[in-house]
Amino acid sequence: MPIYRLSNQLVFPASELAEPGGLLAVGGDLSPRRLLLAYSLGIFPWFCDDEPPLWWSPDPRCVIFPEEIRISRSLAKCLRQGRFRVSCDTAFAAVLDGCAQSRRGQPGTWITAAMRAAYLRLFRMGYAHSLECWRGDELAGGLYGVVLGRCFFGESMFHRAPDASKVALATLARKMAEWGWPLIDCQLPNPHLLSLGAVEIPRVEFLRRLEQGGVLPGRIPPPGFLPEGAFSREPAD
Image (cartoon, rainbow, N blue to C red; front, side, top):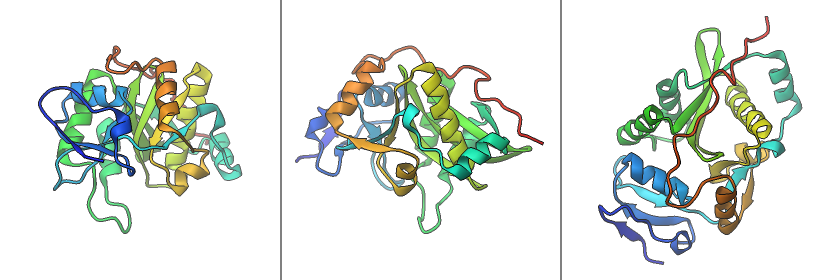
């Protein structure tokens, strides 16, 4: 399969033209309009600092259906005891930076300075959101992503305390299930996500579910939102 080189025109090739590994296109920019168009088409950027923007549409796609998230006994106990205070959109830049810190055994980060600036713009526009887990005044973990329609396109998560990122994801999934939001996009599978109930579905089904969730290809809706205060909860003493 050829890899398509993007021009200044806001156009992406059809997702089914991606190579077997999911790589669809190279080039273009990280402007809000291009990023939002990409998400509406089931495409996301992922590249390193020394590379041009790379755009992906893997088949199958890893997702979590909010009502099917898997809560282990230990995580249920953590949630029940309220070990962390969970908030929404109170420390978006700090969550970005936490996610950008190098993982053990993984040099560098894909959240480059350009990516950081791009998602901060989406946050200011009301499309990108974060969930934060606090232990006192310390940011213990969190996640961030993009909301279009009734779907959450997860980008990254991190933790500095055991279970902090799991609590953020479980809180998001439980709230989305309450609201009737159908899908958390996890992009690519890993053992951590699979242990939390993530599954892989065919790309054609993923795109169909996006439309069912109000994400219409190529049509950018008004900024998505997570209700203010929806996740706020004081930890138990």
